[in-house]
Image 1 (spheres, rainbow, N blue to C red):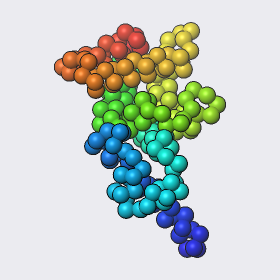
Image 2 (cartoon, rainbow, N blue to C red):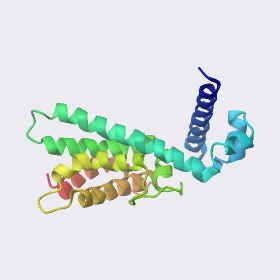
Image 3 (cartoon, rainbow, N blue to C red):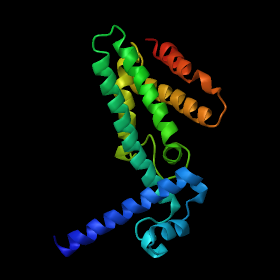
Image 4 (cartoon, helix red, strand yellow):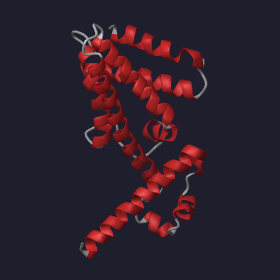
Length: 200
């Protein structure tokens, strides 16, 4: 291994450590607790080293959001794949796949609240719904579109339908987390969303 390769590997390792530490701190104490000073202390590097990777907290949030988008896309595809094989012989195949997708989305948001906030609530400097949208964000949307496009209905733009369904999932995720919805009806909300919005 060349010196340059070793340096690049070390740099990538430091970057992973910074992001993992930021995520851990945000999940434990919220994003307000994530400061460059605290991160530098936790990873045992100086603040200038941290700034050599990220210009500040906003870039760290953006990087966490991109990681989260890739993880969410993988979780959605895994749920869709599992429900496809399980529902192959069922008469309600599309319904089972969309229900599984909705549960996977809500489950991801529940298990990763700080990452979800980085993706959709905080300013990470990322462009959404534009030419400049980073690939991980596009791919997370594509993971929704792949399943929801098949149930959009005649004459309905699949991407537009996916946006509306996603907005409903996001609303359920954020209202549930904020304690604005009674906890006992979570499954019934998913069923209602699939029945009424997807109409399957």
